[in-house]
Image (cartoon, rainbow, N blue to C red):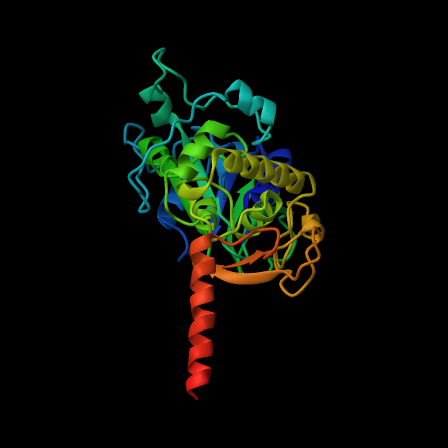
Length: 354
């Protein structure tokens, strides 16, 4: 499943290729992964793609007000999506740290929310915000094509643009998500996600991690804690920071969370530079695969030697996902080691009775 570097790579490619183009028409085919297909068909034609940005593992196609569909009453409020989630997010101007990080890679547009002077968003700005939210799932791809090109198999959505091209969404397994969101519904949807790992401060990161007894691997992948990290970059950052994936967040010391955040940010930034990891299906907006999989130190390397100490890489299940680690570099927490010793002793007793 594409994670932060892959989605950032695709968002930047689309920003360079289709931002500023107006959507002329929408053609939908399979729609079971869409929150409200009717809203997408009715609301997108006539609107301009102002910019494309990443939000966690999602892409947001920010849309201008555009032209109201002829059958829609101009005074009618935006149609709510079936996928309302009941949360909010502040979408104000980027801070200095955000600009310095260059994470989104996209300048703020005129539709971004403005402050009312007291640090809160203007309700008028929120009401005017519109976006197409896209999650690629495991096998999804969104890319521009010339209108005359044959449709690829599993093309489920086609957005005809005013320059003769089409933005096509292809997804064989349909594990992704697509939703048109506007106003408070958009703000509410984004608010349910945690901090961006490339922008979060060391203090906030430590507070989010050390305030939970959940295992650190699960916390890194919890999108309400951090948005955008998945299995690959959780494994890689834990190996680099020498932290076992089964360690409880609350048991980590402050210097360990600082080390983990530094490792995570460095890995994510390098993965973005190398256009992400292509394990199976991921390609960028030009159809090119990423290269960061060539730098994986531990992910999917079970049975091979650790690059740091030479010990054999192992795997275990943490938070329902396979987790790869070095048993020497990433020492298991005491409680886990104790359980293993008890299991070994029980095995010896069982054998002696036989």
